[in-house]
Length: 571
Image: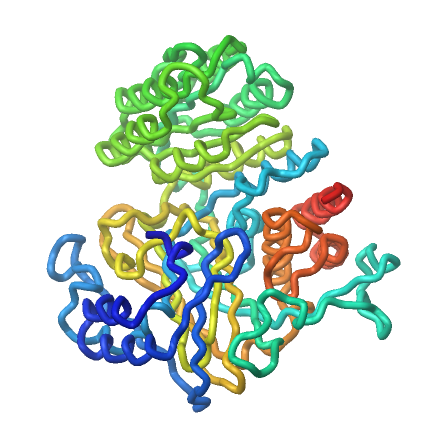
Protein backbone atom coordinates (compact mmCIF):
# COMPACT_ATOMS: atom_id res chain seq x y z
CA UNK A 1 0.00 0.00 0.00
CA UNK A 2 1.34 3.44 -0.82
CA UNK A 3 2.32 5.65 2.09
CA UNK A 4 -0.11 8.35 1.00
CA UNK A 5 -2.96 5.93 1.63
CA UNK A 6 -1.92 5.15 5.22
CA UNK A 7 -3.81 7.80 7.16
CA UNK A 8 -4.15 6.12 10.54
CA UNK A 9 -2.03 3.43 12.14
CA UNK A 10 -3.17 1.80 15.36
CA UNK A 11 -0.98 0.55 18.17
CA UNK A 12 -1.37 -3.10 17.21
CA UNK A 13 -0.26 -2.55 13.61
CA UNK A 14 2.70 -0.49 14.74
CA UNK A 15 3.70 -3.22 17.19
CA UNK A 16 3.42 -5.95 14.55
CA UNK A 17 5.48 -4.00 12.03
CA UNK A 18 8.16 -3.12 14.55
CA UNK A 19 8.34 -6.75 15.63
CA UNK A 20 10.06 -7.61 12.37
CA UNK A 21 13.03 -5.50 13.45
CA UNK A 22 13.74 -6.85 16.90
CA UNK A 23 12.22 -6.54 20.34
CA UNK A 24 13.86 -3.19 21.12
CA UNK A 25 12.29 -1.61 18.09
CA UNK A 26 8.97 -3.22 18.95
CA UNK A 27 8.97 -1.62 22.39
CA UNK A 28 9.96 1.76 20.97
CA UNK A 29 7.34 1.61 18.23
CA UNK A 30 4.60 0.45 20.61
CA UNK A 31 5.35 3.18 23.15
CA UNK A 32 5.48 5.82 20.42
CA UNK A 33 2.35 4.52 18.73
CA UNK A 34 0.41 4.74 21.97
CA UNK A 35 1.01 8.50 21.93
CA UNK A 36 0.72 9.07 18.21
CA UNK A 37 -2.29 9.92 16.12
CA UNK A 38 -1.26 10.07 12.48
CA UNK A 39 -3.14 12.37 10.17
CA UNK A 40 -2.82 13.19 6.50
CA UNK A 41 -2.77 16.83 5.38
CA UNK A 42 -4.36 17.65 2.06
CA UNK A 43 -2.37 18.75 -0.91
CA UNK A 44 -2.33 16.55 -3.96
CA UNK A 45 -1.92 13.29 -2.11
CA UNK A 46 1.60 13.87 -0.80
CA UNK A 47 2.55 11.98 2.33
CA UNK A 48 2.08 13.59 5.72
CA UNK A 49 3.04 12.02 9.03
CA UNK A 50 2.41 13.52 12.43
CA UNK A 51 2.35 12.75 16.14
CA UNK A 52 0.83 14.59 19.08
CA UNK A 53 3.53 13.70 21.58
CA UNK A 54 3.59 16.70 23.93
CA UNK A 55 6.91 16.33 25.65
CA UNK A 56 10.31 16.13 24.05
CA UNK A 57 13.85 15.69 25.22
CA UNK A 58 15.58 18.90 24.18
CA UNK A 59 19.05 17.60 24.98
CA UNK A 60 21.54 17.47 22.12
CA UNK A 61 20.83 14.21 20.32
CA UNK A 62 23.31 12.59 17.96
CA UNK A 63 20.68 10.86 15.86
CA UNK A 64 20.02 7.27 14.98
CA UNK A 65 23.07 5.29 13.89
CA UNK A 66 22.48 3.64 10.55
CA UNK A 67 21.78 -0.09 10.76
CA UNK A 68 24.64 -2.28 9.64
CA UNK A 69 24.85 -2.31 5.87
CA UNK A 70 24.72 -5.69 4.10
CA UNK A 71 28.04 -6.40 2.43
CA UNK A 72 27.25 -9.31 0.14
CA UNK A 73 25.29 -9.52 -3.08
CA UNK A 74 21.48 -9.55 -2.95
CA UNK A 75 19.91 -12.79 -1.84
CA UNK A 76 22.81 -13.91 0.36
CA UNK A 77 22.97 -13.80 4.14
CA UNK A 78 25.59 -11.03 3.92
CA UNK A 79 23.35 -9.09 1.55
CA UNK A 80 20.10 -9.67 3.41
CA UNK A 81 17.52 -6.96 3.57
CA UNK A 82 17.41 -4.88 6.73
CA UNK A 83 14.33 -6.68 8.03
CA UNK A 84 16.29 -9.94 7.96
CA UNK A 85 19.21 -8.76 10.09
CA UNK A 86 19.76 -10.57 13.35
CA UNK A 87 22.43 -8.39 14.96
CA UNK A 88 19.97 -6.19 16.86
CA UNK A 89 21.31 -2.93 15.43
CA UNK A 90 17.86 -2.10 14.10
CA UNK A 91 16.78 -1.47 17.69
CA UNK A 92 18.40 1.97 17.54
CA UNK A 93 16.28 3.05 14.57
CA UNK A 94 13.28 5.37 14.87
CA UNK A 95 9.69 4.10 14.84
CA UNK A 96 8.50 3.08 11.39
CA UNK A 97 6.21 6.06 11.07
CA UNK A 98 9.18 8.41 11.23
CA UNK A 99 10.73 6.88 8.13
CA UNK A 100 10.27 8.10 4.56
CA UNK A 101 11.50 5.86 1.74
CA UNK A 102 11.42 6.37 -2.03
CA UNK A 103 13.17 5.37 -5.24
CA UNK A 104 15.27 8.06 -6.84
CA UNK A 105 13.76 9.84 -9.83
CA UNK A 106 15.40 12.12 -12.40
CA UNK A 107 12.32 12.58 -14.60
CA UNK A 108 11.53 16.14 -15.70
CA UNK A 109 8.68 15.60 -18.18
CA UNK A 110 5.94 16.93 -15.90
CA UNK A 111 7.53 20.36 -15.66
CA UNK A 112 8.26 20.54 -19.39
CA UNK A 113 4.70 19.61 -20.28
CA UNK A 114 3.27 22.13 -17.80
CA UNK A 115 5.39 24.87 -19.40
CA UNK A 116 4.11 23.90 -22.85
CA UNK A 117 0.48 23.80 -21.69
CA UNK A 118 0.69 27.20 -20.00
CA UNK A 119 2.40 28.68 -23.07
CA UNK A 120 -0.63 27.52 -25.05
CA UNK A 121 -2.89 29.44 -22.66
CA UNK A 122 -4.21 26.41 -20.79
CA UNK A 123 -3.78 25.19 -17.24
CA UNK A 124 -2.21 21.73 -16.93
CA UNK A 125 -4.35 18.88 -15.67
CA UNK A 126 -3.48 18.57 -11.95
CA UNK A 127 -3.02 14.81 -12.49
CA UNK A 128 -0.01 15.55 -14.74
CA UNK A 129 1.73 17.74 -12.15
CA UNK A 130 4.41 15.87 -10.22
CA UNK A 131 6.28 18.19 -7.83
CA UNK A 132 9.49 16.14 -7.79
CA UNK A 133 9.83 16.60 -11.56
CA UNK A 134 9.47 20.38 -11.19
CA UNK A 135 12.10 20.34 -8.45
CA UNK A 136 14.52 18.10 -10.35
CA UNK A 137 14.32 20.23 -13.49
CA UNK A 138 16.89 22.51 -11.84
CA UNK A 139 20.43 21.26 -11.35
CA UNK A 140 21.94 22.01 -7.96
CA UNK A 141 25.45 22.89 -6.88
CA UNK A 142 25.88 20.00 -4.46
CA UNK A 143 29.29 18.58 -3.65
CA UNK A 144 30.01 15.63 -5.94
CA UNK A 145 31.73 12.29 -5.25
CA UNK A 146 34.91 11.25 -7.00
CA UNK A 147 33.67 7.82 -8.10
CA UNK A 148 30.34 6.09 -8.64
CA UNK A 149 27.51 6.63 -6.20
CA UNK A 150 26.37 9.77 -4.39
CA UNK A 151 27.09 12.53 -1.97
CA UNK A 152 24.33 13.51 0.47
CA UNK A 153 23.60 17.14 1.34
CA UNK A 154 20.88 18.05 3.85
CA UNK A 155 19.89 21.65 4.52
CA UNK A 156 16.77 23.72 5.00
CA UNK A 157 15.20 26.97 6.11
CA UNK A 158 12.19 28.55 7.76
CA UNK A 159 9.37 29.61 5.41
CA UNK A 160 8.14 33.12 6.05
CA UNK A 161 4.65 34.63 6.23
CA UNK A 162 3.60 35.61 2.76
CA UNK A 163 2.18 38.71 1.16
CA UNK A 164 3.02 40.96 -1.73
CA UNK A 165 1.61 44.30 -2.80
CA UNK A 166 0.78 44.81 -6.48
CA UNK A 167 3.53 47.43 -6.81
CA UNK A 168 6.09 44.85 -5.64
CA UNK A 169 5.07 42.18 -8.14
CA UNK A 170 8.10 42.98 -10.29
CA UNK A 171 10.26 41.06 -7.86
CA UNK A 172 11.91 43.87 -5.89
CA UNK A 173 13.95 42.80 -2.92
CA UNK A 174 11.47 44.32 -0.44
CA UNK A 175 8.12 42.59 -1.02
CA UNK A 176 7.12 42.98 2.62
CA UNK A 177 6.20 46.36 4.04
CA UNK A 178 4.87 47.47 7.38
CA UNK A 179 1.38 47.84 5.97
CA UNK A 180 1.53 44.82 3.66
CA UNK A 181 -1.24 42.29 4.32
CA UNK A 182 0.16 38.81 4.53
CA UNK A 183 -1.04 35.31 5.04
CA UNK A 184 -0.25 34.32 8.60
CA UNK A 185 0.29 30.82 9.85
CA UNK A 186 -3.16 31.06 11.44
CA UNK A 187 -4.57 30.91 7.89
CA UNK A 188 -2.39 27.99 6.91
CA UNK A 189 -3.82 24.44 6.64
CA UNK A 190 -0.56 23.24 8.19
CA UNK A 191 -1.10 25.27 11.33
CA UNK A 192 -2.32 23.78 14.58
CA UNK A 193 -1.33 20.51 16.14
CA UNK A 194 0.04 20.11 19.62
CA UNK A 195 0.09 23.76 20.52
CA UNK A 196 2.99 26.20 20.59
CA UNK A 197 4.12 28.48 17.82
CA UNK A 198 2.27 27.84 14.57
CA UNK A 199 5.44 28.94 12.77
CA UNK A 200 7.35 25.78 13.69
CA UNK A 201 7.27 24.50 10.11
CA UNK A 202 10.52 24.14 8.20
CA UNK A 203 11.48 23.16 4.67
CA UNK A 204 14.16 20.45 4.62
CA UNK A 205 16.02 19.66 1.41
CA UNK A 206 17.77 16.34 0.81
CA UNK A 207 20.19 16.68 -2.08
CA UNK A 208 21.96 13.79 -3.80
CA UNK A 209 24.62 14.20 -6.48
CA UNK A 210 26.55 11.81 -8.72
CA UNK A 211 30.04 12.51 -10.01
CA UNK A 212 30.46 15.05 -12.75
CA UNK A 213 29.74 14.08 -16.33
CA UNK A 214 32.73 12.16 -17.61
CA UNK A 215 34.88 12.96 -20.59
CA UNK A 216 32.99 11.78 -23.67
CA UNK A 217 36.05 9.77 -24.70
CA UNK A 218 36.09 7.73 -21.51
CA UNK A 219 32.57 6.34 -21.41
CA UNK A 220 31.58 2.94 -22.71
CA UNK A 221 30.30 2.84 -26.30
CA UNK A 222 26.54 3.14 -26.72
CA UNK A 223 24.02 1.06 -28.67
CA UNK A 224 20.90 3.22 -28.98
CA UNK A 225 17.63 2.07 -30.55
CA UNK A 226 15.40 5.03 -31.39
CA UNK A 227 11.71 4.14 -31.51
CA UNK A 228 10.02 6.99 -33.36
CA UNK A 229 6.30 7.75 -33.49
CA UNK A 230 5.34 8.65 -37.09
CA UNK A 231 1.56 8.60 -36.57
CA UNK A 232 -0.66 11.32 -38.00
CA UNK A 233 -0.67 13.27 -34.74
CA UNK A 234 3.10 13.71 -35.08
CA UNK A 235 2.55 15.96 -38.13
CA UNK A 236 1.79 18.88 -35.79
CA UNK A 237 4.64 21.43 -35.79
CA UNK A 238 7.00 20.76 -32.91
CA UNK A 239 6.65 16.99 -33.05
CA UNK A 240 8.18 14.84 -35.82
CA UNK A 241 10.01 17.80 -37.38
CA UNK A 242 11.62 18.50 -34.01
CA UNK A 243 12.51 14.84 -33.53
CA UNK A 244 14.18 14.58 -36.95
CA UNK A 245 16.22 17.72 -36.49
CA UNK A 246 17.39 16.60 -33.05
CA UNK A 247 18.32 13.11 -34.20
CA UNK A 248 20.39 14.58 -37.02
CA UNK A 249 22.35 16.81 -34.66
CA UNK A 250 22.87 13.98 -32.17
CA UNK A 251 24.09 11.59 -34.91
CA UNK A 252 26.91 13.99 -35.71
CA UNK A 253 27.90 14.27 -32.05
CA UNK A 254 28.02 10.59 -31.11
CA UNK A 255 31.34 8.77 -31.24
CA UNK A 256 32.50 6.59 -34.11
CA UNK A 257 32.27 3.45 -31.94
CA UNK A 258 28.65 4.19 -30.97
CA UNK A 259 25.82 2.47 -32.86
CA UNK A 260 22.22 3.43 -33.56
CA UNK A 261 19.11 1.69 -34.86
CA UNK A 262 15.85 3.32 -35.99
CA UNK A 263 12.34 1.90 -35.59
CA UNK A 264 9.29 3.80 -36.86
CA UNK A 265 5.71 3.03 -35.87
CA UNK A 266 2.25 4.14 -36.92
CA UNK A 267 -0.45 1.53 -37.66
CA UNK A 268 2.40 -0.96 -37.74
CA UNK A 269 6.05 -0.88 -36.74
CA UNK A 270 9.09 -1.47 -38.91
CA UNK A 271 12.83 -1.39 -38.47
CA UNK A 272 14.06 1.45 -40.65
CA UNK A 273 17.72 0.94 -39.80
CA UNK A 274 19.19 -2.07 -37.98
CA UNK A 275 21.88 -1.49 -35.39
CA UNK A 276 24.58 0.37 -37.29
CA UNK A 277 28.02 1.33 -35.98
CA UNK A 278 28.47 4.98 -36.88
CA UNK A 279 32.09 5.26 -38.02
CA UNK A 280 31.85 6.29 -41.66
CA UNK A 281 28.13 5.37 -41.90
CA UNK A 282 26.65 8.61 -40.59
CA UNK A 283 25.35 9.47 -44.05
CA UNK A 284 23.30 6.27 -44.01
CA UNK A 285 21.78 7.26 -40.66
CA UNK A 286 20.95 10.79 -41.86
CA UNK A 287 19.28 9.34 -44.93
CA UNK A 288 17.10 7.03 -42.82
CA UNK A 289 16.11 9.93 -40.56
CA UNK A 290 15.19 12.08 -43.55
CA UNK A 291 12.78 9.45 -44.86
CA UNK A 292 10.57 9.57 -41.76
CA UNK A 293 7.16 11.05 -42.54
CA UNK A 294 3.84 11.20 -40.62
CA UNK A 295 1.46 8.35 -41.46
CA UNK A 296 -1.72 7.21 -39.66
CA UNK A 297 -2.63 5.86 -36.19
CA UNK A 298 -0.49 5.26 -33.11
CA UNK A 299 0.25 1.59 -32.47
CA UNK A 300 2.52 2.21 -29.51
CA UNK A 301 2.48 -1.44 -28.49
CA UNK A 302 3.88 -2.51 -31.88
CA UNK A 303 6.51 0.23 -31.68
CA UNK A 304 7.71 -0.83 -28.27
CA UNK A 305 7.74 -4.53 -29.22
CA UNK A 306 9.64 -3.98 -32.47
CA UNK A 307 11.96 -1.50 -30.80
CA UNK A 308 13.03 -3.88 -28.09
CA UNK A 309 13.33 -6.75 -30.58
CA UNK A 310 15.64 -4.59 -32.70
CA UNK A 311 17.63 -3.62 -29.60
CA UNK A 312 18.05 -7.25 -28.59
CA UNK A 313 19.10 -8.24 -32.12
CA UNK A 314 21.70 -5.48 -32.07
CA UNK A 315 22.84 -6.09 -28.49
CA UNK A 316 26.52 -5.20 -28.11
CA UNK A 317 28.70 -6.69 -25.39
CA UNK A 318 30.62 -4.06 -23.45
CA UNK A 319 28.26 -1.30 -24.57
CA UNK A 320 25.44 0.55 -22.86
CA UNK A 321 22.26 -0.68 -24.57
CA UNK A 322 19.27 1.63 -24.42
CA UNK A 323 15.92 2.19 -26.13
CA UNK A 324 14.92 5.83 -26.70
CA UNK A 325 11.17 6.28 -27.26
CA UNK A 326 10.11 9.51 -28.99
CA UNK A 327 6.33 9.89 -29.01
CA UNK A 328 3.28 11.79 -27.84
CA UNK A 329 2.32 8.47 -26.17
CA UNK A 330 -1.28 8.60 -27.38
CA UNK A 331 -1.86 4.93 -28.17
CA UNK A 332 -5.06 4.52 -30.19
CA UNK A 333 -4.69 1.33 -32.23
CA UNK A 334 -3.27 -2.17 -31.90
CA UNK A 335 -2.27 -3.06 -28.34
CA UNK A 336 -3.59 -0.18 -26.22
CA UNK A 337 -3.56 -2.03 -22.90
CA UNK A 338 -0.85 -0.20 -21.01
CA UNK A 339 -0.13 -3.17 -18.73
CA UNK A 340 0.67 -5.42 -21.69
CA UNK A 341 3.00 -2.81 -23.17
CA UNK A 342 4.61 -2.27 -19.78
CA UNK A 343 5.23 -6.02 -19.37
CA UNK A 344 7.19 -6.12 -22.63
CA UNK A 345 9.41 -3.30 -21.43
CA UNK A 346 10.01 -4.93 -18.05
CA UNK A 347 10.83 -8.31 -19.61
CA UNK A 348 13.50 -6.80 -21.88
CA UNK A 349 14.99 -4.87 -19.01
CA UNK A 350 15.24 -7.97 -16.82
CA UNK A 351 16.52 -10.31 -19.53
CA UNK A 352 18.99 -8.02 -21.30
CA UNK A 353 19.56 -4.98 -19.11
CA UNK A 354 18.15 -2.66 -21.79
CA UNK A 355 16.84 0.53 -20.20
CA UNK A 356 14.37 3.07 -21.58
CA UNK A 357 14.62 6.82 -22.05
CA UNK A 358 11.27 8.43 -22.92
CA UNK A 359 11.09 11.77 -24.75
CA UNK A 360 7.61 13.28 -24.91
CA UNK A 361 6.44 15.77 -27.54
CA UNK A 362 3.18 17.44 -28.57
CA UNK A 363 0.52 19.68 -27.04
CA UNK A 364 -1.60 16.58 -26.38
CA UNK A 365 0.62 14.12 -24.59
CA UNK A 366 0.11 10.76 -22.89
CA UNK A 367 2.02 11.79 -19.79
CA UNK A 368 0.88 8.98 -17.49
CA UNK A 369 1.71 6.18 -19.95
CA UNK A 370 5.13 7.58 -20.81
CA UNK A 371 6.02 7.88 -17.14
CA UNK A 372 4.95 4.30 -16.43
CA UNK A 373 6.90 3.01 -19.43
CA UNK A 374 10.07 4.69 -18.27
CA UNK A 375 9.59 3.48 -14.68
CA UNK A 376 9.05 -0.10 -15.83
CA UNK A 377 12.07 0.15 -18.13
CA UNK A 378 14.36 1.45 -15.36
CA UNK A 379 14.77 4.73 -17.19
CA UNK A 380 13.38 8.22 -17.06
CA UNK A 381 11.38 10.73 -19.08
CA UNK A 382 11.69 14.27 -20.30
CA UNK A 383 9.57 16.52 -22.50
CA UNK A 384 10.59 18.88 -25.30
CA UNK A 385 8.61 21.53 -27.15
CA UNK A 386 11.27 23.72 -28.75
CA UNK A 387 14.39 23.19 -30.85
CA UNK A 388 16.52 24.53 -28.00
CA UNK A 389 15.07 22.03 -25.52
CA UNK A 390 15.50 19.20 -28.01
CA UNK A 391 19.16 20.03 -28.58
CA UNK A 392 19.69 20.10 -24.83
CA UNK A 393 18.08 16.67 -24.44
CA UNK A 394 19.79 14.92 -27.34
CA UNK A 395 23.16 16.61 -27.24
CA UNK A 396 23.61 17.10 -23.48
CA UNK A 397 21.21 14.95 -21.43
CA UNK A 398 21.19 11.78 -23.51
CA UNK A 399 24.99 11.41 -23.65
CA UNK A 400 25.01 12.02 -19.89
CA UNK A 401 22.55 9.17 -19.43
CA UNK A 402 24.30 6.65 -21.62
CA UNK A 403 26.49 5.61 -18.71
CA UNK A 404 25.08 4.65 -15.31
CA UNK A 405 26.76 5.37 -12.00
CA UNK A 406 24.09 3.77 -9.79
CA UNK A 407 21.41 1.12 -10.16
CA UNK A 408 18.32 0.57 -8.01
CA UNK A 409 19.03 3.69 -5.97
CA UNK A 410 16.72 4.41 -3.04
CA UNK A 411 16.67 7.05 -0.33
CA UNK A 412 15.44 6.77 3.23
CA UNK A 413 15.06 9.69 5.61
CA UNK A 414 14.81 8.87 9.32
CA UNK A 415 13.20 11.69 11.30
CA UNK A 416 13.91 12.01 14.99
CA UNK A 417 10.69 11.70 17.05
CA UNK A 418 12.34 13.75 19.80
CA UNK A 419 12.33 16.84 17.59
CA UNK A 420 9.87 16.13 14.74
CA UNK A 421 6.13 16.25 15.22
CA UNK A 422 5.02 15.89 11.59
CA UNK A 423 6.54 15.69 8.13
CA UNK A 424 5.45 15.51 4.52
CA UNK A 425 7.46 14.52 1.45
CA UNK A 426 6.52 16.83 -1.42
CA UNK A 427 5.85 14.64 -4.44
CA UNK A 428 7.34 11.19 -5.17
CA UNK A 429 3.95 9.49 -4.70
CA UNK A 430 4.67 7.21 -7.66
CA UNK A 431 8.15 6.37 -6.35
CA UNK A 432 7.32 5.35 -2.80
CA UNK A 433 8.99 2.22 -1.43
CA UNK A 434 7.96 0.28 1.68
CA UNK A 435 10.31 1.25 4.51
CA UNK A 436 11.28 -2.35 5.14
CA UNK A 437 12.32 -2.73 1.48
CA UNK A 438 15.00 -0.06 1.62
CA UNK A 439 17.77 -2.64 1.92
CA UNK A 440 16.03 -5.33 -0.11
CA UNK A 441 17.99 -5.07 -3.34
CA UNK A 442 15.43 -7.19 -5.16
CA UNK A 443 13.08 -4.19 -4.98
CA UNK A 444 13.51 -1.77 -7.88
CA UNK A 445 14.97 1.65 -7.27
CA UNK A 446 16.03 4.32 -9.74
CA UNK A 447 18.85 4.37 -12.28
CA UNK A 448 21.06 7.47 -12.26
CA UNK A 449 23.92 8.53 -14.51
CA UNK A 450 26.85 10.93 -14.07
CA UNK A 451 26.24 14.66 -13.83
CA UNK A 452 22.87 14.30 -12.11
CA UNK A 453 21.44 15.83 -8.97
CA UNK A 454 18.33 14.49 -7.24
CA UNK A 455 16.44 16.61 -4.74
CA UNK A 456 13.66 15.79 -2.29
CA UNK A 457 11.91 18.52 -0.30
CA UNK A 458 10.09 17.95 2.98
CA UNK A 459 7.77 20.13 5.02
CA UNK A 460 8.68 19.36 8.63
CA UNK A 461 6.99 20.60 11.80
CA UNK A 462 9.36 20.82 14.75
CA UNK A 463 8.10 20.05 18.24
CA UNK A 464 7.74 23.21 20.34
CA UNK A 465 10.97 23.92 22.18
CA UNK A 466 12.79 20.93 20.70
CA UNK A 467 16.42 21.14 19.61
CA UNK A 468 19.11 18.77 18.46
CA UNK A 469 19.21 16.11 15.77
CA UNK A 470 16.34 16.35 13.28
CA UNK A 471 16.91 13.77 10.54
CA UNK A 472 19.40 11.44 8.88
CA UNK A 473 19.15 10.84 5.14
CA UNK A 474 20.67 7.72 3.60
CA UNK A 475 20.96 6.76 -0.05
CA UNK A 476 21.55 3.13 -1.08
CA UNK A 477 22.53 1.95 -4.55
CA UNK A 478 24.07 -0.94 -6.42
CA UNK A 479 27.30 -0.56 -8.32
CA UNK A 480 26.25 -0.85 -12.00
CA UNK A 481 29.03 -3.37 -12.77
CA UNK A 482 29.53 -5.44 -9.61
CA UNK A 483 25.95 -5.12 -8.30
CA UNK A 484 27.35 -4.70 -4.79
CA UNK A 485 25.40 -2.38 -2.45
CA UNK A 486 26.77 0.89 -1.13
CA UNK A 487 25.39 3.58 1.16
CA UNK A 488 26.08 7.20 2.03
CA UNK A 489 24.40 9.35 4.69
CA UNK A 490 24.00 12.94 5.78
CA UNK A 491 22.27 14.49 8.78
CA UNK A 492 20.86 17.80 9.97
CA UNK A 493 19.91 19.38 13.28
CA UNK A 494 17.26 21.90 14.21
CA UNK A 495 19.72 24.79 14.54
CA UNK A 496 20.51 24.62 10.83
CA UNK A 497 16.89 25.47 9.97
CA UNK A 498 16.50 28.79 11.78
CA UNK A 499 17.43 31.08 8.88
CA UNK A 500 14.56 32.49 6.80
CA UNK A 501 14.09 31.04 3.34
CA UNK A 502 14.85 34.32 1.57
CA UNK A 503 18.33 34.32 3.17
CA UNK A 504 19.08 30.71 2.26
CA UNK A 505 21.22 29.30 -0.52
CA UNK A 506 19.87 30.28 -3.95
CA UNK A 507 19.53 26.63 -4.93
CA UNK A 508 17.29 25.96 -1.93
CA UNK A 509 15.18 28.99 -2.81
CA UNK A 510 14.76 27.75 -6.39
CA UNK A 511 13.77 24.33 -5.04
CA UNK A 512 11.14 25.95 -2.82
CA UNK A 513 9.75 28.10 -5.66
CA UNK A 514 9.47 25.05 -7.94
CA UNK A 515 7.72 23.07 -5.19
CA UNK A 516 5.32 25.90 -4.34
CA UNK A 517 4.53 26.31 -8.05
CA UNK A 518 3.77 22.63 -8.57
CA UNK A 519 1.65 22.58 -5.42
CA UNK A 520 -0.34 25.61 -6.61
CA UNK A 521 -0.99 24.03 -10.03
CA UNK A 522 -2.18 20.87 -8.32
CA UNK A 523 -4.45 22.76 -5.96
CA UNK A 524 -6.22 24.98 -8.49
CA UNK A 525 -8.67 27.33 -6.80
CA UNK A 526 -7.05 30.71 -6.23
CA UNK A 527 -3.65 29.42 -7.31
CA UNK A 528 -2.39 29.14 -3.74
CA UNK A 529 -1.05 25.79 -2.67
CA UNK A 530 -1.25 23.84 0.58
CA UNK A 531 2.38 23.93 1.75
CA UNK A 532 3.44 25.92 4.82
CA UNK A 533 3.26 29.69 4.15
CA UNK A 534 2.30 29.01 0.53
CA UNK A 535 2.50 32.27 -1.44
CA UNK A 536 0.08 33.39 -4.10
CA UNK A 537 1.20 32.95 -7.70
CA UNK A 538 1.71 36.72 -7.89
CA UNK A 539 4.16 36.67 -5.02
CA UNK A 540 5.76 33.46 -6.23
CA UNK A 541 6.42 35.07 -9.62
CA UNK A 542 8.04 38.02 -7.81
CA UNK A 543 10.31 35.66 -5.88
CA UNK A 544 11.26 33.86 -9.10
CA UNK A 545 12.04 37.19 -10.79
CA UNK A 546 14.35 38.11 -7.95
CA UNK A 547 16.07 34.71 -8.10
CA UNK A 548 16.47 34.95 -11.87
CA UNK A 549 18.32 38.25 -11.46
CA UNK A 550 20.41 36.92 -8.58
CA UNK A 551 21.45 33.70 -10.31
CA UNK A 552 21.59 34.96 -13.88
CA UNK A 553 20.39 31.58 -15.15
CA UNK A 554 18.05 31.09 -18.09
CA UNK A 555 16.36 28.12 -16.41
CA UNK A 556 15.21 30.24 -13.46
CA UNK A 557 14.18 33.08 -15.80
CA UNK A 558 12.02 30.61 -17.73
CA UNK A 559 10.53 29.41 -14.43
CA UNK A 560 9.62 32.99 -13.54
CA UNK A 561 8.03 33.53 -16.95
CA UNK A 562 6.01 30.32 -16.59
CA UNK A 563 4.70 31.34 -13.17
CA UNK A 564 3.67 34.72 -14.58
CA UNK A 565 1.75 32.89 -17.33
CA UNK A 566 -0.03 30.74 -14.77
CA UNK A 567 -0.86 33.79 -12.69
CA UNK A 568 -2.39 35.50 -15.74
CA UNK A 569 -4.88 32.67 -16.23
CA UNK A 570 -8.09 32.88 -14.23
CA UNK A 571 -8.53 30.24 -11.54
